[in-house]
Length: 553
Image (cartoon, rainbow, N blue to C red):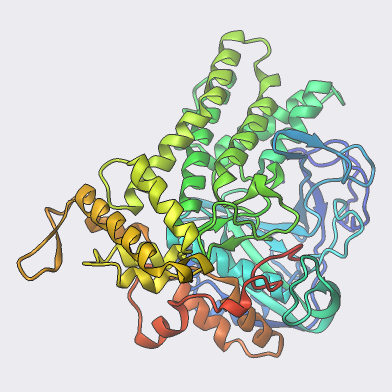
């Protein structure tokens, strides 16, 4: 708020809650709308430790008030105003303005996300943002609220992804109102409808997510478009400001501050390309599908942002897509292509800053053109690591993918069992859901799996000792398989009872899930293994909320 441009049409008091066009400026000052009678639900023990916060702080009145939307009593130099930012929308490289109520694209932005604090702790700058903090000028007529159900999912997912070693925004805290509720479309119990088939009254909640910044590719697009079209006198200056702000917040360790602006822009594209490709490869490594990978849901810092209709794979399927409105272009193994489209729009947004520097513009275009090759290299490195190989073997992978789809096999369980270096396919069968095709020819499938396992052992350097047990011929990369193949992943069918119990005021299961999912590579108790290291019940496949979403409110 000190160094970027404020919307000149913003109110002084931050009471700016009705939908309107925001034509310029980087942010709009907004007073969050507090939730009524907040109650503590959860906080991140790990992030509190990193920030130097005592766990008891999460339950103090002042902390609860601030992070449930009440800034009225915060002490100086903290601000009693939060801020919301606008961004543009593109889907697979095509700009869209139709969803904007004004048909101009000037109404997109943080409709219910309001940042309330920046703090530097141990040399790291963090921005803290309320999700569900009430309406802003970008709310497009919405109520600005999040419900407990979706807030629980996001809180747990951010905790889990960080523990998995995947770059992500972080969870700080989660509070629920004991009295305030809103109606949302959702699925009736056991519904197999693609779209919600009922309206339900749900408790309002606010979760706080934390990141070095919340700059999205779509945000750069907004300022790039305004500069390209010269929409107002400060358009080019605002684009330059937001790009330099991004570099300072996210890439200061990688980009020399003494470089010229045009060289910084080229270095930024190079750094983001590597980060984005690595991020998406990590998503696929852990079985994560973002679901809605528009440019406005793509963080320019190269980490996971937006936990709406996300999901973790159960039965392996390259076309796995938890969001019913997402289409195959955002499906599990199409995420690298979607990332390339977002990177293309990122580069388009930067181009106005290089129009007078054709050599740098050419460099930018070359960086953009090479994204697919960089992405493919990251994917091959990732698959090799999951399989414990020194180098990616396309034939081995193709035959594995075919077997995993036809059987089908659970994504997390299969790779974890493979990490135990099984002597035969017995342990791998723990991951089999067994399709009709498998049931009709189980002997044939078992022979194919046995042949694949022997081929894998030969390539991975797994030999048999005199007693018949599998051993490694040297440590190699096989010894690291359990470090890249988690034992536990956050499945929606496990989360559903946690948020249902939370709505009734019982947070025990939620906190148990938090404990389990923040140790995803660890061998935990027998009880934890029985509860969470198992196949999805067949009856839950195709059930709304447990397998798919049309929205996540």
